[in-house]
Image (cartoon, rainbow, N blue to C red; front, side, top):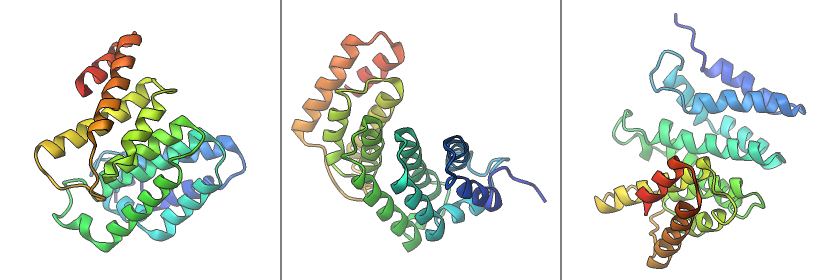
Length: 221
């Protein structure tokens, strides 16, 4: 029987590690769970269906959320939100699963809870936390995410931030242009929001020397 790096047993251990008072241990456990959330689907290192069941268990994600709500380190809050986001993308909505899998109640409940938590952190004092909250909100179809992104870009213009923002814009355009109703919430991007986003990205494009950031901004604009 194959021994997977990412499976129920190893995730249980990592979840316990998140409750440590030692920041270094929390970071180590967070990295492990984060890697499990974005591991190759049906790859050699991940028991995909077992990990999927683990993440979608309310017992486990409510523990993760409780830890998130008590966390004071901005970077760790970002990581926890990122985990919730990746589970939606890779263990709920991915096209490799049965056609109507994402419509099952266990999946709908998970996404509702993730969206609820994202909104709760959307006004956080940390720009990186607001960015990840908005990334989740945009993925769910909440149009308020675009205003949050514009606000974030006033302070954060690094590669990671811009990649998340332009990725969200790209996904929105892809589904909108093809008239695919894939939004969990059903929001839109207003003309005013489009102008503000375009102006923000144009400003970043003009002032950055990073070629990758320039390319992402130009593509999004």
